[in-house]
Length: 167
Image 1 (cartoon, rainbow, N blue to C red):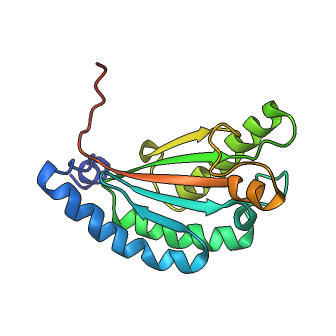
Image 2 (tube, rainbow, N blue to C red):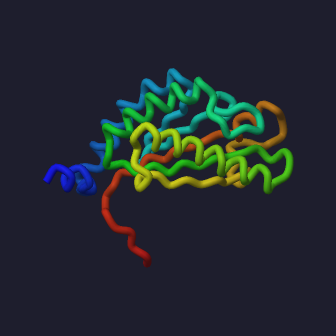
């Protein structure tokens, strides 16, 4: 009986509870801003940006100790909010070979996902994407702007269904 209860999928949130769930989750994430994360509560999900300079060394997909510290805090919160799906996207600037940047963005997103998984976040809750330089936040016209574009984003979506529907 215990094994069945442990492996059971979390019940989806009902529409009236989604907003409250997101508000409470957002409030619990606010202290992460002290560690350099940018946090935005949107209408239907929460958006986090982890700056690349604080997360990875240049041309590397290995997490820095500072990034691991932040992800330790984040993972414990994600474990508390198990009705959340996490989309992790890696981004690069536009300098260099686009194929290299694409692979590096994928590897960086994967490194964050693997780290969260190693801390107990279930793989079925994680969607990992590498977007290369396709979605810059600012023009890639200066070293400062390129640094802004090198980042990992996490989108926290409330679980409202246990199935995916194709339309």
